[in-house]
Image (cartoon, rainbow, N blue to C red):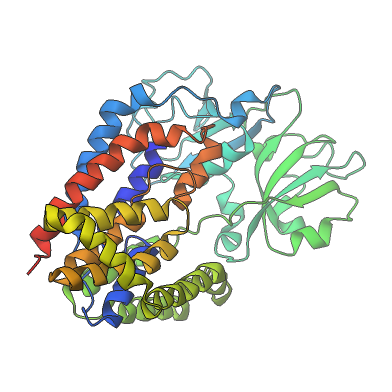
Length: 455
């Protein structure tokens, strides 16, 4: 839950932090208020983030009850895979101890052996120094073994056998069970020339009831061994009915991370922030320029670019525009604004801002964030018009009200994601969410006018 709240707070610090921020920016532009710069709301979002994080750190341990995750309630041992990794030549792990490298207490995976030249270190202490080229043997569950493939500074010991696969954007992880009559039985990966024979590379091996040690390429295979493979897209179709394997099944996982163009992507993200933040180019122009550039440079494939477009999000935003227009044209915005002004105007301008903020936060707990922003934006503009204030602070307050959802697990997408993962109950969100919401309702109306005055 704190992780979800941190994501929400981080997204409220810039105008590109969430889709809601971008959506409200479009609404402001259509209303003639102009577009806000990338860092226009940072002066508001940063103090809110600091205050909310302080509440989470200080009050969270007392307000959040201990909950067990669904995985902790599963009885029985997990399948353990053995994976062999190597410390890269330019890795920051080289020269560090096992403890300093963060390899001592990994969640769900254990370092069982270090190989250095012809020496094998089986009893590995936390102060054992690591060196470039060291071969590390880990044992752990499938999910954590896959996580090792993403750890910076570690590369698969079998990487030399699948350099071409590493560059293949269609590669995927596949599980293959060796059949009892397979010619692989009794052979090693090296002797069978597995990479050349099957066009795939073995990343890890699972053997029921036995922990493997030594180099994966020297392990004598048995029937029933489960191989975690890095393979091309056609491997499953080609070998599903093949006698060498009893079962072939692609993992329901995202494709392995491609690190070869990481620096290019980092530079592009930096360019996006600089160009859009300084106003040299608009956010739309910069985003499109970088996106097309990455496709042309083959850093991203056309298929990956197409798959990354979420049609549901686009449809939601499009229909939300219609909702906001209906609220404005029907006179509902004006009527509701009149009620808000009557109730809060005698208490002053800050009370009006707080009223719009509170109403937006309540609405966003029961409908989507974009829909809440579309519903409340014309009402906020009408409140500003009827009370004689600038519409800018009221438009900006909608951004925070539509995003800062702490009270329910359905108010924001990340809340929903951690709801089941953390084993939380519905009411757990309100336990920590109430003090956060009270802080936001008090602090935000005080901060917004500092950057966007009422007159």
